Length: 245
Image 1: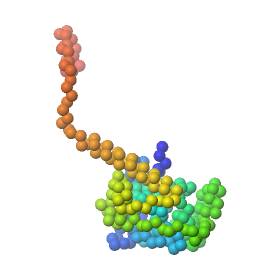
Image 2 (image 1 turned 90 degrees about the vertical axis):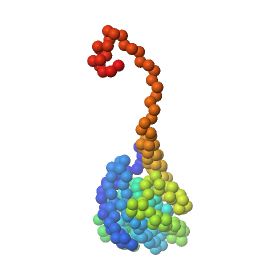
Image 3 (image 1 turned 180 degrees about the horizontal axis):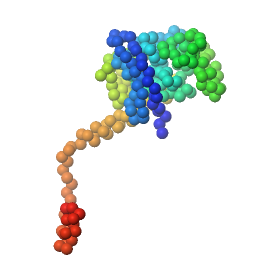
């Protein structure tokens, strides 16, 4: 069974930009394509001191790190190579630490349990996710800031693909390969990217198969059939009752 889980709630988001738009984190069920319905490429700004971008004009917890978009909604993390998804879940131990270290003040739609937490410090994931997560991530919120990696380049080519021009999943990887040559350097981000690419490849294969099945000629010549034996006279009545011989 694939580890891709679909969102289970609805989050309404608004963007301010060249075109006023409403953004919805759509909800779906397995086999239904879901994602953030963003009609335009969002404005992204760097989080000072972090190799992470956030969307300051979005009423959503939308970030960009290591070549991928990351969303925190309905108590889950999601990632995607495109700003409008489709999204795949990232388990609590599969989210890069630099994403988790972003201070609370950069969450545009913080959940209720963030109330009272310092705006200049990261969310208390060790408290929220419990002892098991904390034991496997000792010191997760401390690092040598001088060794922080440079931010990944923004995929600004995606600005040309908005609204009705937003590419289908089977086209997204092709466009990315043509226009954006950065590859995730962190293992966790790379794993999420590979899952997303694999998901896209599966969908592309299904799309091609469906297209091929619908494009087959309708008036295909019938295969020649060997002549059927003529029934004996005393069996004609019985065969007529069952239908043509």
